[in-house]
Image (cartoon, rainbow, N blue to C red; front, side, top):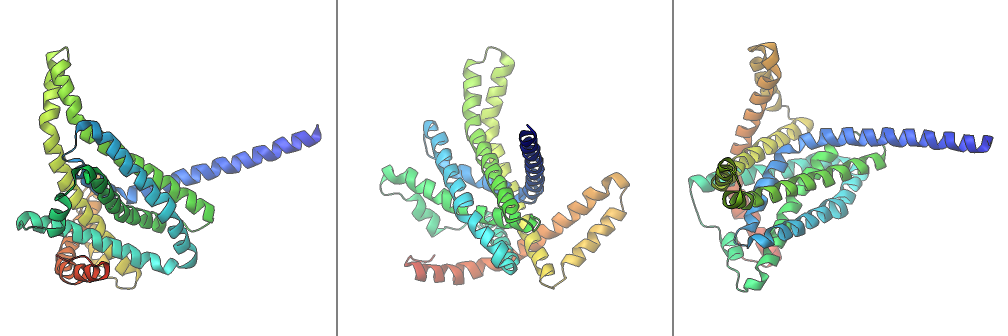
Length: 322
């Protein structure tokens, strides 16, 4: 009996440790998730474009295929790479973060530049010019998964930089929770967004009350506006997050401007408002400065990416550069 009681006591001790570990993982994942919010918004804003042109019955199956690819990207490819970096080459994390931040700045700036000065994109035109309609879905899904890989790599790198150094299993568990939670949040939101107009149409036709039918018509009319709003918010988030990552990276590498300048401006703004608004004022000024610098940096990257990087990639892969 004493042996059984000792065993139960050991099991209880293990359970307490496990419960504490779960709480630690959940807390760490929550903090990391907040840092990746900007990338998540862009991910959710980008994905619906891959569903354009498909019958409503194919939308959810396509989203599920992309989500499956996203799970594979994060958990099978990026998670092991992140663990290797964390334990064998931690000095690479900041440069990789800055590389991802540069990509976000470029993408956000390119979207704004394209909106202000519309121009043809040969790669996009080639993607849309599908010779065999039967392969359209496969190519769209493949393109979405490739885009997801880039954004997932940025999310996992941000997560890795935010996870406290410690037990390797704790780090892996936190990254896994973040990867799973992010994927569910993004593609669950995408599924809700793309089906909302169908829900609205059903309500407009079949609801029993005039109020419900009016709400359905409002959903149908409002979804295009929501998609445009998501695109704008996603672009702003890319510039804000990308600029912040690059600025923090420069600070970590020893170049303390403009990080300290932005911090000084944010503190001045916080000192100029009442206590309840100080935190918001500090955040708003920091985000605005990060976004503006991210936009300027991204605009500088456009000729570099289109005239140098893209031709080099095209020469390496054998495809024609734009």
